[in-house]
Length: 269
Figure (tube, rainbow, N blue to C red):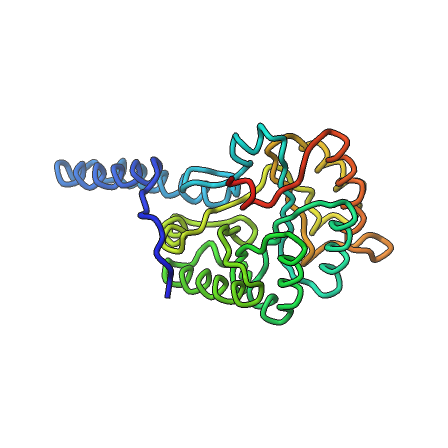
């Protein structure tokens, strides 16, 4: 059963959308001939909502961590977030690299993968990292599902990840960052915060580690949330997962500019 969360309050876009629908209906009741204009307003409104869901860093559908809170930024903190694992061929090597540089990371794990490799989730927590919710199955159609389906998916991942790691997730990242208006009330019910990112290197698509690194280095500022992948990682021409090539120089760059890596939950302090 879901744990109690905070009461959900619709954001400005959804309140405006409700008003558009009411006004469109009222206009048609008052004068039937206005129906083309009323329909156009509703269609445009739905298009705007769809656009907001297709924009991972949007705040229009509800609160969304696109960077760390101001207090963390003032402390010159930065968050490494690593998605789509755990992967038994990649994750242990990522953990070793993080240890080498005394860095902390937030792993957004897929529930069904965590169920197959719970020892990796426990190792993440043992080494000082955080395990957060990236859905149970990482389905590509997640953003077009309804509230009941979303609730089942997120609750299953909450239970799986808590059992695998001993740490109940506080954050959720949607598959591919895509969502719809039903997600925010589900997050409120489960007591989860939505997190996207500040900068990404497209390391699931680009096998050129130098290019991925340049993209990430361009966004290394206090408060940044950096996105990488241990699952579904692209490979270099030599067959090496890109994250393994990128992490050492990236962590050196973070240190060189005086930033400190923290988990998202540490940034809440």
